Length: 392
Image (cartoon, helix red, strand yellow):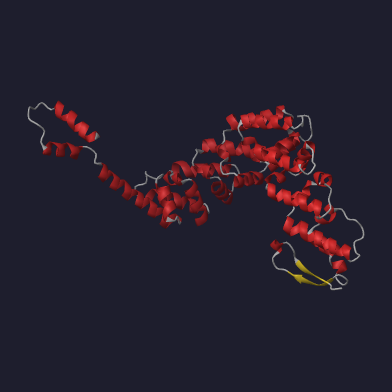
């Protein structure tokens, strides 16, 4: 339609009394871009790039086609070959190259001499070894997309904040967007707010050690989180204020509400729930069904009081099938046969290491209770040994 309109306007501007003839249109259309031929050229170029990604980076055809859409500027193999050769010279293996290109396909458009080489030299000036740089780029592909004038100050900031290069590498491994956050607009305002709340020194170090991405959330989100903690009755002056912040940070408000209702159904107070999460924030990652099954087992089978579990929430972080049930059955069997008359606390035998538990509750009674001990090769199944009861 656009070409017909252009042709109509063209005819009106031509000083002629005759009607336009077919060859006039053909002449005009030969001058105007022809979408079909352009599309064919574009498709051919995409096919070349996609095949290059398959042959040189190990992509499957689908991912190669998707990535090729971001690489329209590549006309030949020379440009991407130079990037891949440079990466290989720093020790990138095929898997690392594939991950980097998959996450940041535009890195193949970078100029090695003007962009990549200066960037990697700047990383080396920070004390990073070639293997560190590979780890950095593999876990945080964003580093290849921003200029080193921006990335280096951010890396240095995080390294100074965390206190060591090892902690920095661990952070990069767990979050592949950490260098994308603005220090001035996002990180520093959060740090200032936390310090206003009394969260500094060792308290801040606790957060940075276990939840470093805590300080990368939006400032309004952090303010809301602080309000939620205060609404639970934990003041900023409390020594557990920062722990409660971390506990709530790990769970969505709606899920926390359901967790609160679940534990209250077992007789816990709101204070009990908050205290439990302060001690073991990892509880927030467990499913409601999983926690309910553990509560029911500990109360109904193991004979624990609900209040005891509230003060020892670590029990809820243990595997039900691989630790809670098997160890309870061992102790129940020993008691039924007149052994272990002492009333051991649940946490005593549940929290013992595998070796200590077997030594104290199994090996000692192997002649009177167990027929033999059968080694099991796969510790992931929960036990190093299978226990066979002595028949009466």
